[in-house]
Length: 336
Image 1 (cartoon, rainbow, N blue to C red):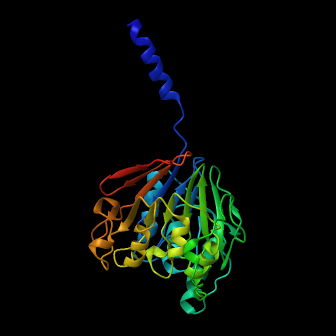
Image 2: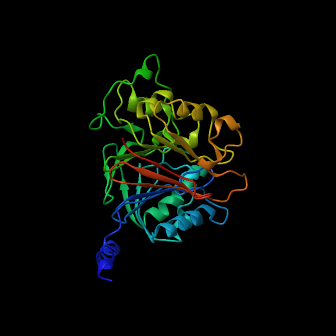
Image 3: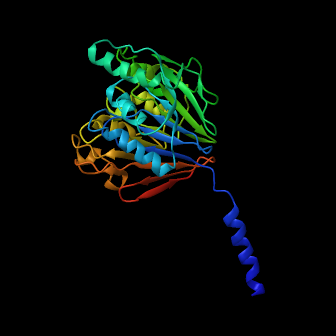
């Protein structure tokens, strides 16, 4: 019995140690919209966009389900990248399910027309019940335990390279800045999320003209570990110079079954040196098998959606772990 005591003591000590502090990221299936839930080591939550309206508040329900799985009972910060219906439409349904404390956006609506006005006014009616924060490039969203830096907002981008960035982007040679996008896509709030040495980039639906401003002729961002593929993997975003400049180790595409996942974008990502894997929320039915990832890397493989999400758990040393909730296929990426 005496020989067993050291082992018992070690076990007792292990059970009393605090759990490792990690950053949890849920890429929620809102079928071609965006909704990404981040839970910082502090327990504070950041939700980026809320998916679509309608369908009996389907997307709000999916967000609430992911929040429950993450142990989140309120949204500390809701970041609306821009005011398109697939990004801001779920606010009403979500606000009925859980408290939203802080609303973060780029400021005034830039599109005109009845539908755009109705959508923005509905969002504003809920936003005005909480604390409203308008951000500009260079601002920090104050989530405890992680750094969330705004790189783009209201059509503008950061003026100077981030620390450690600033190298020339060779692919900019001969590449002309695309025409200015006048829609809300070009107004997107894009953020760099940093946890220790782990770096994740989410630019919303930012378009190629503003991507150019971020990486040409010099890369103001630097390289990243995880890239939430812009604009659901569509061609108005995701220029070759931009993707080559940020050189992600892993890409995560929030496409729908029949929206996003453009073959050209998929191929540009796959051909990027250093990219290990490309995960997708859906099999892109309008593409072909050669331009979809293997099924293990796709959360929803059927057109009849099961609302499966992809979860990323990041450690401060840059290692991160990705799990497909459909089949529990998982992979760990160790920072070298």
